[in-house]
Image (tube, rainbow, N blue to C red; front, side, top):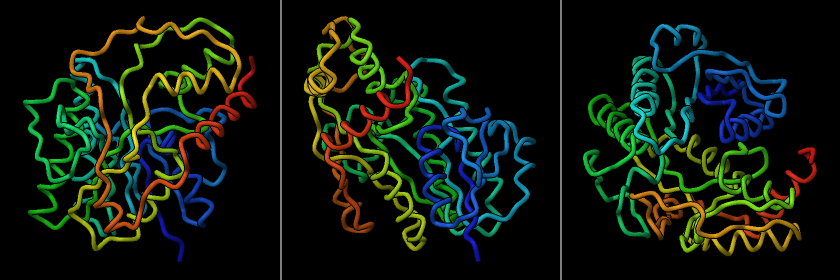
Length: 304
């Protein structure tokens, strides 16, 4: 019997890649999102439903029985806009409550490393961050959602696993994200602004992320756990920009033109020993290989 999965945010970067993998595995895939997918993110065998997770009435279209729920909905926005908090916290709360009394095998929450706030790297899952210590509405909303889900697990044994993701990248990512911006600037041979590049960041190729998600979905006995999913070998931002420039042989980065956010952490990367131990997972795709595949995708698929 086919496994049935619901992916909220199924038209986004992560949701699209997970949906594509699940279709290949022969699963029945349903996507729930606010907007229709872009043509390059449309999959023939996916059932697309539309609505807003913050509106309970919109969830009524989810009439099927699902084995797995993956909540990858929401946008990355580090502003002080209260709508960002609402999208991540209330959206997750409504979704979890909708499936609380239904028979599901697992609810996988796509959380974020921003939930740790200013904790020193390498960050570990046993650190207990507080919402009041976080700055952006995005980080507050993500952490509030995680805390609510863990309350449901403690009280009702709601089958949930939380992933705290670091930076992800790969083909078909939105153009407003860091790597596509740099790649686009270089391919076009433009001058483009960037920070001084002294930060160190953890980058995980999207195929490695999807592999971790599929592993977790099959390990329902690990409900109640939080896992860091990222690369424990951070890379200096300036080195990445230089690599892309050399690979493309064009582009002029203007270092220092973009200022750091007040709450920006200079070194951000995870401790992934828990994921290694319980999920038998760690990144396989080297950063140079993943970056080359990503650059080649944009060069081949985008008209310049």
